[in-house]
Amino acid sequence: MQQSIEIDEKIFQDAVRFYGTIFNIPPLASKIYAYLNFDFEKVGVPFDEFVEVFSASKSSVSTNISLLLNAQLIVDHNKMDERKRYFFINDEYRKIRFEKIVQKMQDELKLIDDLNKFKKGKKYERDEKMEGYISLLNKSIKNIQESLNKL
Image 1 (cartoon, one colour):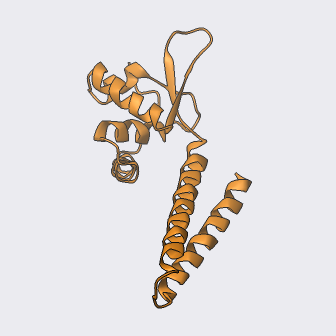
Image 2 (tube, rainbow, N blue to C red; image 1 turned 30 degrees about the vertical axis):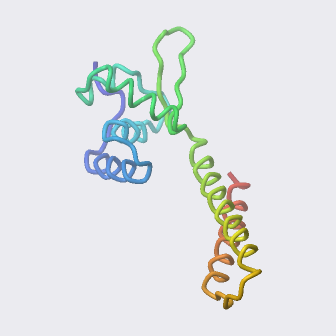
Image 3 (tube, one colour; image 1 turned 60 degrees about the vertical axis):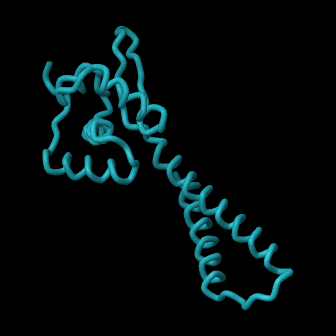
């Protein structure tokens, strides 16, 4: 079996390091994800190609594909006339990723608000740095949500 997509080795290695770090995924999962980024025509990559290209066991490839599917980083499809599954980058993931970031910021704002309500009964100085941080969180949430609406 031949590689179905052409890759640039340096960009591939940079992508493997980047995605491994940003998504906190194992090396093989990062390689699979980085490899799929080169599928510009969205033809999909079959399971057997990963096994061959990365000289990995079917079990390892299967485990790492499952991890990527569960994390919603990739999706799979069966073509009408074949039993093979083809894997693709999940184009919706960028939106999902930023929705998760917004949710974490909103959760933090709620926690800060709860802490502020708790300490209101006590005598504490006004925290200007915290107020600046709260303002930054609110502006960031607003900016990200406006951008998400355009996706």
